[in-house]
Amino acid sequence: GVDGAVPRVMVGSAAQLASYESAKRNLKETGWIQEGIGLHFTASMLSGLVVTTCMNPFDVVSTRLYNQGHGALRKYSGPVDCFRKTFAAEGLRGLYKGWTAHYARLGPHTVLSLIFWEQTKLLASRMRGA
Image (cartoon, rainbow, N blue to C red; front, side):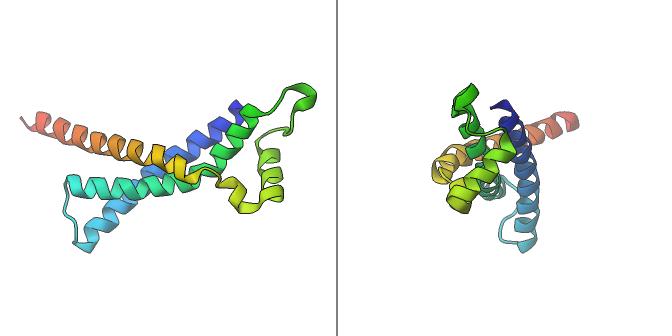
C-alpha cells in the first residue's frame, strides 16, 4: 500500500503549489481581484479542484492496494498493475470514484492551508519591516 501512497503525495503537493500560484497570478492579471484574502480564497478553491482531480486516481490506487488481501489473495502486484487493471475493468471513471467526497475533504484543507500560509508570509514580512 505504501508504494501507492508516495506517488499520491508527490502528485498532490506538486499540483497544489503549482496550481495555486498560477491561479493567483492569472486572477490578479484579470484585474477582477486584488491582492488580499479574497484572491487567496479564490485561488485556493481553484487549486483544490486541480489537486483533487490530479490526486484522485492515485488515491483510488492507494486505497485498493491497502485494502487488497495478502499472499495468494493479492489482486495487484503494485501501483502500475492496479492502475492498469482498474482502467481496463472500469475505464477512466473507475479512477475517479469518490471524487466528490475527496474534494469535500481536500477543498477546505487546501483553502485553509494556503490562506494560513499567505497570512503567515504577511506577518513575517511585517515583523521584518518593524
